[in-house]
Image (cartoon, rainbow, N blue to C red; front, side, top):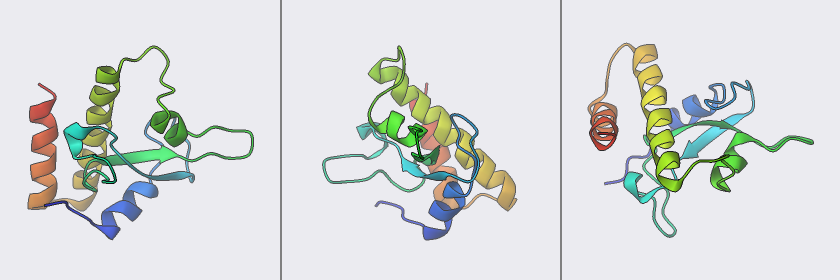
Length: 117
C-alpha cells in the first residue's frame, strides 16, 4: 500500500533544501527510482521524499536538477544511493522533531537502511 500524508508533505516542503540549504523555496520531492516505488504514472510513497528547492528567476533549482539528472559525474546507481541518504536524513529529522516514530515512518526508514546495504 502506498502511504500518503498531507501533513508530512507540507512538513518536508517547509524544510531547507537538503542539497544546497536554500531556505523558503523547497517542495516535497519524491524519489525517482523504482527502488522506492516509482513507476510509470506512479509517484513513490510520500515517506520516500526529501526537500529540494524549486526554480527561481535566473536559477535552476535542485528539484529540476535532480529530476533532469543534472548531477555532475554521478551514475544512476549513485543517484539512487543519494536519494536513500536524503530520505534517511529527512525521516530522521521528522522523527526527532516529533519525538516519536510512527509505525509507517519507522518501517520506511528500516526499508531504506536495509536497501542501502
